Length: 162
Image 1: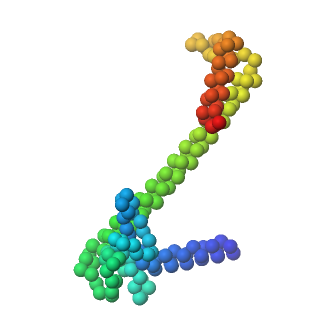
Image 2: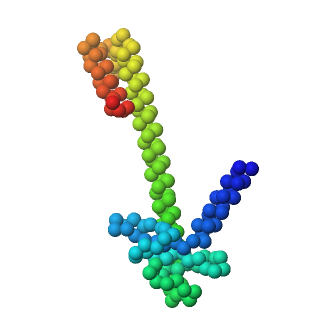
Image 3: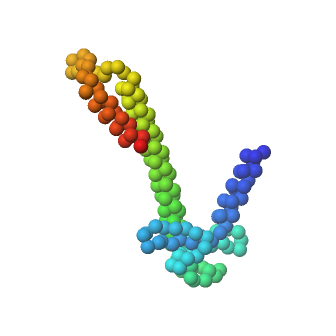
């Protein structure tokens, strides 16, 4: 029952949004913005018509939107398609950025976990060794082992923060 109500709400919001006037504007940094309220220099992309359908328009927001056809009706669908493509590109870019941010956070968490594990193992170990070129264990002196523990502690702080 809740799913049906949620689906109905989402569909009604989509229909309401689809029936509104949409204005496209570009800010001084070159970012494209879409809004249901006109701003100076914005362009009307969609117009609500009396029949309930949407009709594309590329009239500036300052120009009155009367029922008459504009002389550039051949380019209006292209303008709408271009605007839709820009919106899709923006959404895809945002989705990609979010995925990258999540991957980076996961990688940092993994690096922190590994650094903690390495440091804790070095602290718990009585003797520390490194593997030589022939596969044999070469045990570190007490001073070298202490320096290795310090290095692992610094690596843990770098990976996990202070």
